[in-house]
Image (cartoon, rainbow, N blue to C red; front, side):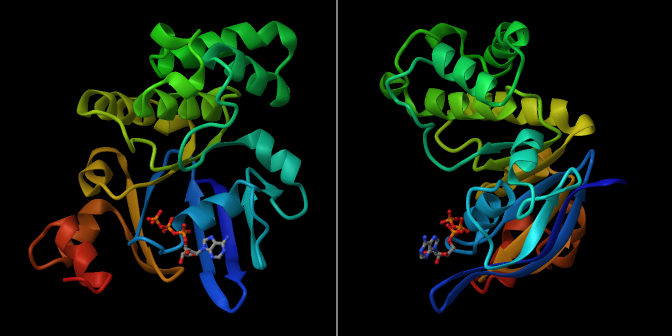
Length: 241
Ligand SMILES: Nc1ncnc2c1ncn2[C@@H]1O[C@H](COP(=O)(O)OP(=O)(O)OP(=O)(O)O)[C@@H](O)[C@H]1O
C-alpha cells in the first residue's frame, strides 16, 4: 500500500482551545477511510487543514508527496475537497460553476468540456445544469459540491459528509460513485451515518477532542464491541454508551 495521504502530528488550536491534537496517520491508494466522531470532534477542521484551507498550528499533511504547508498549490491540484454546506457562487449555474472550477484547477481549455460532462454524468446533474445554484434543492447543491471536487480527477478525495441532505436514492448513488472510484484513489469521508461506513469504507477511524480513539476495518471495530455493532462501539468509545 503506497500512502497518498500522510498526516503528521497535525494540530489546530483556536486560542487556548485545541480542536485537533497531534493526529498521525496514513491513508493509501485503494483505501476509503470513514472519519467518524461526535459533533465538535475536529473532523471538519482536520479536513480543512489537509485541503489547504486552514493553516495548521503545528504538524502537517503530505498529499501525493506534497507538503500542504510548503506547497499548498500542488496539494490543491492533487486533492478534491467537498467542504461542509453548499458550494460558493450561488448565482452561477452548475455548468458555468464547474467550467470555472475546471479552468482554475488548471485543465487545458480543450479538456474542460469533457471533464465537466464527465462529472455532470457521475453526479447526475444533467437536469439542472442551467439553473442558478441558489435555486437548487439541498441534495442537488451537495451534488454540485461533489462534482467540483471531482472535475480535475484528483488522486486524493476529502469529502465532508458527502451524503448530507441527500434522499435515500441519491445516498445510494453517491455511495456507489465513491466505491467505483475507490481502487484508483485515496478517499477520506466524514459521516455520522454508521451504516454508510459499513457500505463504503475499508477502514474507519473514530476521533474525539481531536485525538484518534479507534482505527481499523469496520469489521475489526465491530468485533471489539460486545453488541457487535459499529453504532454501539461508537457510543462506547466516545463516552455516550
Ligand atoms: N474558527 C474557529 N474558531 C474557534 N473554534 C473553532 C473554529 N472552527 C472550529 N472550532 C471548534 O473546533 C472544534 C472542532 O470543530 P469541527 O467543526 O472540526 O468538528 P466536527 O468533528 O467536524 O463536528 P461536526 O460533526 O459537528 O461537524 C469545535 O469545538 C468547534 O467549535
